[in-house]
Length: 263
Image 1 (cartoon, one colour):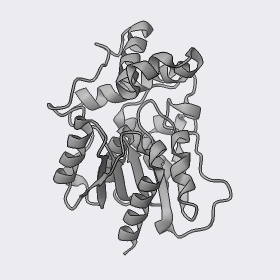
Image 2 (cartoon, helix red, strand yellow; image 1 turned 90 degrees about the vertical axis):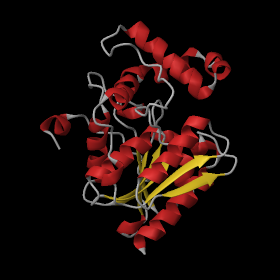
Image 3 (cartoon, helix red, strand yellow; image 1 turned 120 degrees about the vertical axis):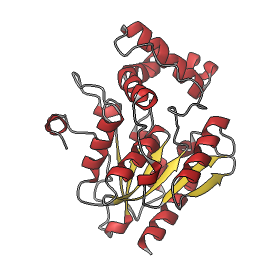
């Protein structure tokens, strides 16, 4: 880890207080996606009461948004994940862009990542992936950045739902616009891509929902084909917000992968 990383403010970590003492094989770390926070995964954690679950706010999101913090690229978020893992290996659940970070960590720190459940991890660097509504430059003014972030949120949530949100609900999303733009920009324009599938040697579950959009379905299938030994799993009726609507299904995937890693 770089000296710069050591100087960063601490991440907000929602590890369950007074968690049961469980074997290392039962540790789980949850990595949320873009424009999200660890709070979204409380229902998943609730379904894993016997496991040592760590869910943290990625830097720039939720309670890990600190004044003066630089927005991180993918590599910076991977450094943070490795720091969260510490010396205690875990099965990692990565949702959406959190899946990209989890897979990159698996490629670079396989001694810490026992396995990855990647739910609809995007591939915005792939030529077939639809254009990401990023600003033309990361040096753009804040107005352009917020407009780009709102376009992203309308695609993610639906125009009607986003437009109906009161300003106090939109505010936290827009406050994270710089980190959203930086991480996506680095994934889209960075060379090489965030991770090399050939370097991922840990068990991987690539999951998607049958009610999701075609781009995430394709990405899940491509990931399963590119990573040696990866399993492709579909969750009937689930869409991109599976962690809120089908937390039981995600918890089941975590348990199954943990059992496989422990065998």
